[in-house]
Length: 232
Image 1 (cartoon, rainbow, N blue to C red):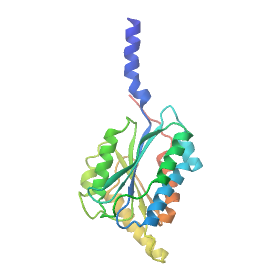
Image 2 (spheres, helix red, strand yellow; image 1 turned 90 degrees about the horizontal axis):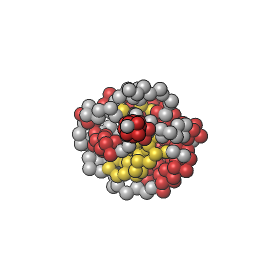
Image 3 (cartoon, rainbow, N blue to C red; image 1 turned 120 degrees about the vertical axis):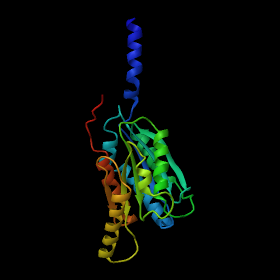
C-alpha cells in the first residue's frame, strides 16, 4: 500500500521536477531589409550574447530547472525556418554547442516581405511542441513593420500564456544619429503597441545590426532575471 502510494506521488511530482523554468524562442528577422552582412551580425551577435559571462551565469544558475532555447528565422507568411530545436541548457557544454550551431548557420530563406503575425503564429506552434516550462517567451527581432500576412495584433490575442518581447533594430543606413533615433523610436512604438504582450513584456533597441550583440545581451539579462515562481 505504502509502495503504491509512493509511486503515485512520484508520478504526480514528475512533471514539476522535469519542467524547465523558461522556454525561450528566438525569432530572427531575415526579410528583404536584412542583407548578408546584417544576417551574419544577427546570428553571430546572438551566439556572442549567449556566451557573455553574465548571461551564461544566469542561464546555468539553476540546472535543476534549466532554460530551454530554440531559434527560427522568418520573413514572409510562409517563410519560417528552424535554426535550433528545443535544447535544455543544463551545462556549459550545451550552451557552447548552441553558440557553435548559430555561428555555423548559413542563410537559406530567400529574402521576402515582413510577416510578423505569421512569425508569432509559428512561435506559438513551436511552444506547443516544446517542453513544459514555467514561463514561455518569444523573443522576436525586427527592423521594420509588418507588411503582409495576418496582423500581429490579431495573432497575439490568441497566444494564451506566451509572453512576446521584442528587439527593434534601427537602420544601418544614414549618418544622422538624430534621424536614426527617430526611426528607432517610431518602430519601438509600433512593436510596443502591435507586437509585444504578456506580463512585464518589453522592447529592447539596437542602433543597427552592428549593435545587435550589445542589445541582445542586455535583453537576455532582463529576461533571465531570477524570479520567485509560486506553484500550486
